[in-house]
Image (tube, rainbow, N blue to C red; front, side, top):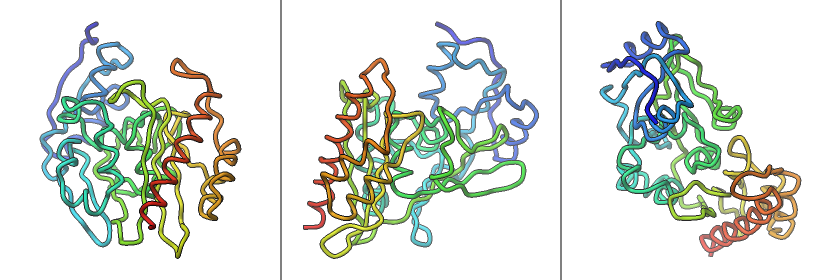
Length: 282
């Protein structure tokens, strides 16, 4: 299929992009990596009157450590992040998840900001942002604001971004020697969207864990924290954590699997990720 007709504008600055969004309101869409957007255009799931290309805006493709956090610009491409030493050293969960995202051709063009803004519930990076207690920097007509990951994902493909907002960066707490993390997913083929996935983080606390965050993806309308399971796992009770998932998750049936199968897979993934966290403590 071919997309519906649309106009094109290349913004040279954030101010210009925001002004274009204000002028065209809900009839405009932003183009960054385009790896999700182009598919929706071709299937006519999206039919904007204007595409605003933001790839020429300077400064949005940088990765830096600032004040105990890793700041990743919205236009940083997946392949760039895979090679980055700061991410490998200080955001290891992101580094672990990136090779699971689609295929090299997609990662060469897709952006981290685009993945977070698109908020596909089966995507890896939104769950990682949630697991790491990260935050999103949003720039709009009223200036810049920061939204915590817990408050950013609102519903299916719905976020805290308004019609005149641009996601400009994400920030993650820089890992320390006490940081623990884990990642696992089930997909029919490597590079496919996950049937079920789990991104996790925690902090070593003696022989146990504290501040455990378990973010499941592919199992609901948004990435979901399993808070009851988090509490049980922090208490060193893996079996109880797996049982607690029934109170945290209620996956619907979909084309990939029934809800019951997804619940079983969630338990298997939790056991695997708990093993990763345990290995890092030893």
